[in-house]
Image (cartoon, rainbow, N blue to C red; front, side, top):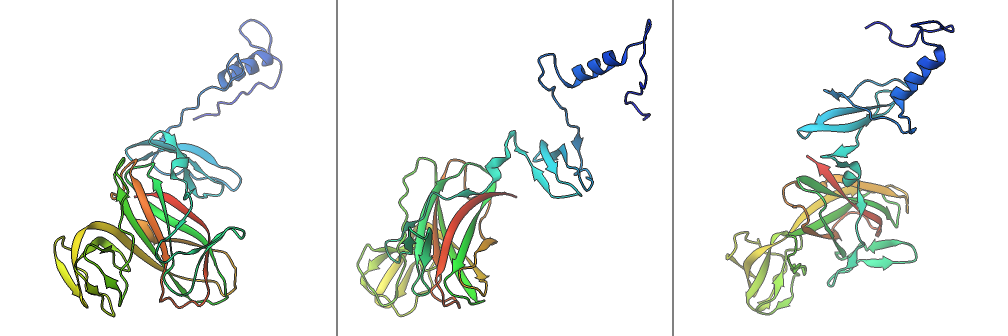
Length: 303
């Protein structure tokens, strides 16, 4: 296409010849209305992100999820950022802080209100809980953490995430207490395995549990012997995810945990349902320091 920009470089007068001022005024009205407001911009849908130069970015439309959505690409063929999702603002995809962990009844982590973090000790199996309402459907949900360690060891830290989904409006009544070895249990007591497996179990014959956990059945109604206790697989319950991360070699150095190992798969959480989350630190990881959680975020992930 030939050059279409204004080529006038001298004053034009006479019949049929616009002046330069008239030409520029008409151009201004194309860009801006008489009230001074900008006109609409229409973005042609792209098959892929347009190339960008070292000092320029670009706004464009591209097919995503069956319809055109707005995108931005940074200078120098930089990262592509989606600005809308199904007609909504893209902040629905940004990570959000969880409402705040509350302490477990059985093995609580320790709140450090002054320092602004939660402490998961290097012994025992410390837990904290939170819940939130899902604001999107058809996405996975990833838990992201900003943490520190109280001592400098480049060692593995074991993290666990328990979760259970409750339909919109349903009562949240999860079984959260975990099974423990060499413990007396009464008929009717309910527990989940130390690493939740998606079910909970109820005592049908009282006694003292064994020194190690039994192989828990995953068919509702099946029973298992555990020392002097008999357990029945009662119903669906908490599911568990685990992830090991290597901490920095310096004490109190902040680092981020952002792993697919702590991501709840798509299809498990519906719009407006409530999601219960339990964060725990394994009692058997290799790090001798305490885990200090500064911030916990939940982020929807498109799949």
